[in-house]
Image 1 (cartoon, rainbow, N blue to C red):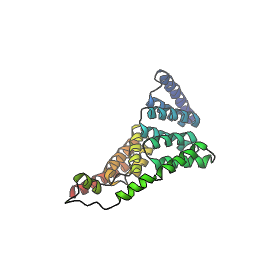
Image 2: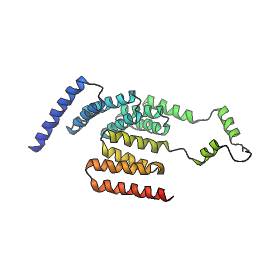
Image 3: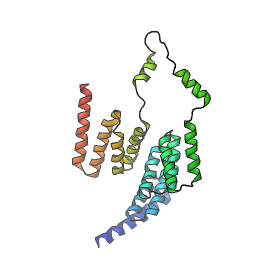
Image 4: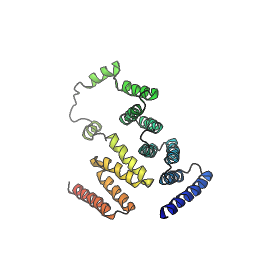
Length: 239
């Protein structure tokens, strides 16, 4: 009886949310909420439809990490959703994340081995990695030792000392932010956990994970991560 009442409430909420969307069809938060309601109601197909539309709206505004976060939600519901993988690959490529784009195309080919679009995309990615003849020559010239009188120029010295950030870890951090803002706290925590492997953002990740657990009502886990963040701060002060 309780289950029936709960289903009834969800259906009513879906109707109300749908009416609101008729007035504001580009309201991303409202559309995301509708997708969540469909998912709770057991209607995966309608949930995916709303999630895809929401992700597309974010992509049109160049909010790529948020769009990718929602496409990932789609493939968590349906791991064989080719179109979601394809759209993710497009956004990864747009941001220069070729490894992630390649992984999406490879996943498509696991689902559909004869997918010509994925085959062509993979070929283009591989071709882009091959050095051109003039680039090879340039690289050989660049590899020759350079003599400096005195110390290297400051700009070059800074470049040598500061390693470039791992783009994949950076992406996980931004995905976590996107999920947190959409109140998808379990997904956000998983992304921050991965991003925390980068020491430069570990403190921030622990703070954000603490906030996520707090929003979930898990005060014990929240305190655990906030205390860990506090220890990181103390260590930095001691350096």
